Image 1 (cartoon, rainbow, N blue to C red):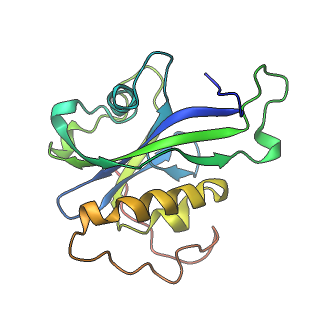
Image 2 (cartoon, rainbow, N blue to C red):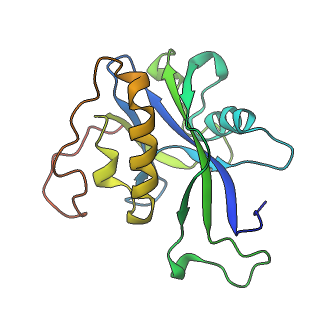
Image 3 (cartoon, rainbow, N blue to C red):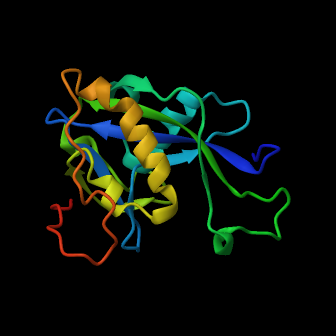
Length: 181
């Protein structure tokens, strides 16, 4: 489903643990890390899509999480020109997303990356709050920044941690990698 402007409706999922760290997944067969996300199907609400995507990509059920909140309005990103499939009708130029922040209340063993027939991730880890800004693919960075900034007060009601100066480091720079599962 693509809207009249060429954007595909989508949900993004920021899953946080008791230590206020975020779930960070590595796309299967790639060295690309991201939050769980996925398209909203026709006649599906964003919240219904959230739970479907959470089950498909991470293997978690509604009773494994609590919804803390979500972004107001759509956050959009455009695909780089070389990723746009111009031979499709309608042409998708990017995604418009509602981002949800979830509190994980299950056990780590509940995370099952192979819960669906087509896994999205092959590894995952917990990372510090602003870490994704230095890791996510460049064309999603602004949306990640906006979602994390808007939702941070839900997780840090007494004050959002300072964003590291190196939040936008380019790939290949030296940094300590988180432990993957």
